Length: 258
Image 1 (tube, rainbow, N blue to C red):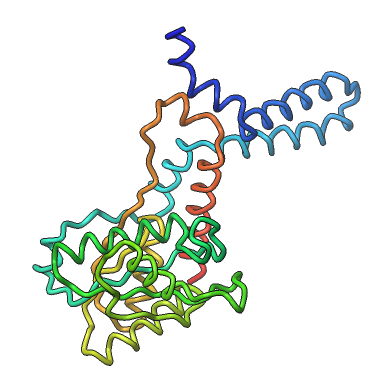
Image 2 (cartoon, rainbow, N blue to C red):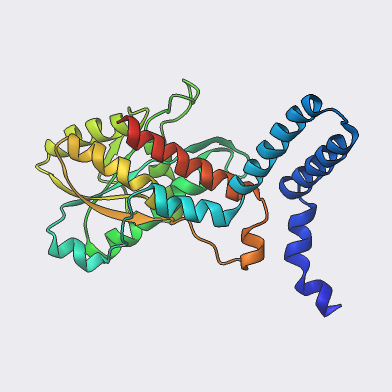
């Protein structure tokens, strides 16, 4: 019984769609390969097999970690005492998404990724007494009538009984507009040195945009792509692995194109 319980995580991963679905496709491709007698009829099967193997790899957390280390510039974590030494004047939390109709709140709430950013910003603020700005409007994929992300962030802080935001930038639709509109808002109050809070994989492109907007940026990264799972589990496909590789590839392309 204890042996089965020890294998619980692996067996669960094998049953879930990401792994079991890809295994089923691979089995069907092997069957189709063996049934194909002619070389020209095997080519589509071979291409489909290679595509499936690539999708398998891109769904592995180990590959997501490797890609993040080799495709993106690395940013080191920061200690709150460093913010004082660097004379940072404000903490800017970059938006990360909204769940517009969260049933449990009967209204909008931040996505888990955005909430993680906000909580880290609050952590830094409490240790430095620096004010917080939150930047996020309604993204390009959002619905026009939904609440802006900055307003939802302010609501989240109220629910937690945390200090209110000093600044809310609620018109931006992407990282470039986050930077431009936040810079204009902060410069009106004489703020030019900021600590920027976002996920580590998102930080290089974000710093580039905020510096281009005229701010002096100290990166305050969080949410590194990593795993505490066993090496075997890191090589089994999962939704999280595919999501993380997607994030890395998107940011890598964004750095190439901006």
